[in-house]
Length: 318
Ligand SMILES: Nc1nc2c(ncn2[C@@H]2O[C@H](COP(=O)(O)OP(=O)(O)O)[C@@H](O)[C@H]2O)c(=O)[nH]1
Ligand SMILES: [Mg+2]
Image (cartoon, rainbow, N blue to C red):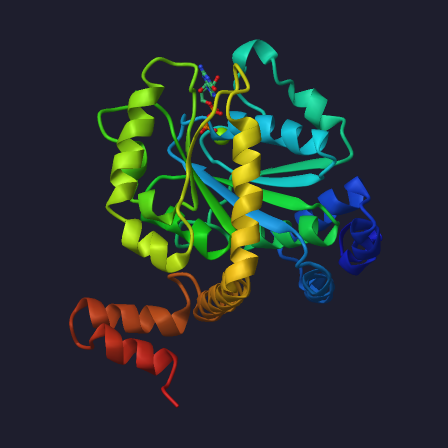
C-alpha cells in the first residue's frame, strides 16, 4: 500500500466523481497492486451504465481531433464523457490542432470530461486489461459515455469491437490509394464509418469508395438490422459532428431494440474473463524464465516434445 492509503479507500470518492480519486484509482489498477481486487470488484459492480464507444483508425487519421469535437458536442447536449486514449505513437494532448480551435484546456477544465492517456498495450497486443479497468472506473464514476481511442495498426485492433457497444472506424482522405481501414483489416468491424478531414477536396472520393464497399455487405447488415452509415466530419468546419453524435445515439437505440445490446454485453463479459485467464496463466507459468516453462521450451525447441503435449503438461486436461 503506497502512501498509506488502501486502494479500496479511493472507490467511494471515485464513484462520487472525485477526479483525483478517479486518477489515483486508475493508477493503482495500472500498477496492479495486491490490494486491487476488492476495489476492482466494487467498481465493476457499480459500472455498466455508460455507453462504451470505440474509435479506431490508422495513426494520423484524425481520431484524437475527432474525439475533441465530439466531446464538445456531447457537452453542449449536457452529457458527460470519459476518454481512455490508447495511443503509443501520439499522446492525446500532443500535436497542435487546427490553430488550437479546439483547445485542450477547454476540455481539461470541464468537470464533465475526464481524459486518461495510456501508452500500454496488452501482452498480446491490442487492448490491455488495464485499459478496460480504466473504462470501468469512468463508467462507475457516472460518465454517460466512455470513449476508447485506439490506433488501428493491424488485426489486434479488431479487439475494440469485443469491448465496445459501438465501434467507429475513422478513415482520412488521401492517406494512400486504398481506404486505410482495409489495409488495417478493420473495415468490417465498423458500426459507423467516419471520413475525417471533410474540409479537404479529396474527402468526397473516400466517402464514395466506402459507400460502394458497404453495398457488398448489405446482406450481412440486413441480418444484423443495422446499416453502418458513412459520416463525413471536419474538425475545422464542424461539419458532420452533430450527425456523428446522432449516429452513435441511433446505434445504441438500435442495439437496445434488437436485443443485440444484451448480446454484446455477454460477449464483452466473456472476452474479459478469457483475457484475465490469459493473464493468470502467463503470470503463473512465468515469463520465459519460469522454470517449468523453460524446461518445456528446451524440449520443444529440440523437438523432443510437441507444443500441444507441453501445454497439456502445464495445464493438465481435466
Ligand atoms: N484539415 C483537417 N485536418 C485535420 C482534421 N482532423 C485532424 N486533422 C489533422 O490530422 C492530423 C492527425 O490528427 P490526430 O487527431 O492527431 O490523428 P490520430 O493519430 O488519428 O489521433 C493532425 O495534424 C490534425 O491537425 C480535420 O478535420 N481537417
Ligand atoms: Mg490520437
